[in-house]
Image 1 (tube, rainbow, N blue to C red):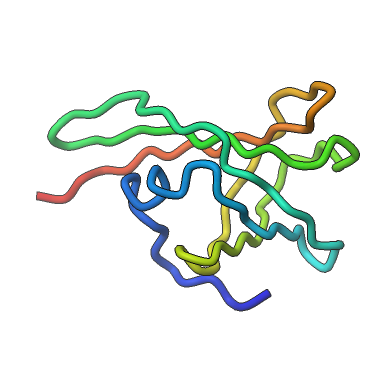
Image 2 (tube, rainbow, N blue to C red; image 1 turned 135 degrees about the vertical axis):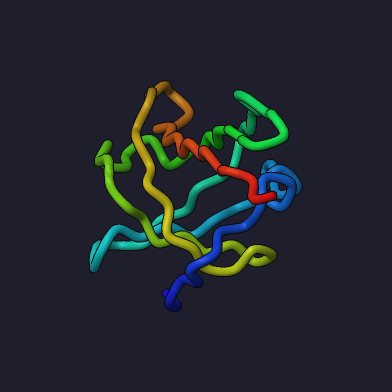
Length: 104
């Protein structure tokens, strides 16, 4: 995977990639596929924007909370802190939480 830029995509950029695929890797571990399956705005004010992303990984994925290197065809490479939040017959789900302060 390539080096991730210092700036993450915006909320709107992430939301436009709903149901798209991301390639994920933790450190030097094996890469695996994620699908962005949900996105929600948690809070939005003139000075603060909070939102969450929910990714689905294969059911056999390890439920490890960590910083993952992600890559998406449209958004490019990025590093995200992902937390496993649930598991069902379809997959293991990881959540990313964003809290952006909006500059004046």
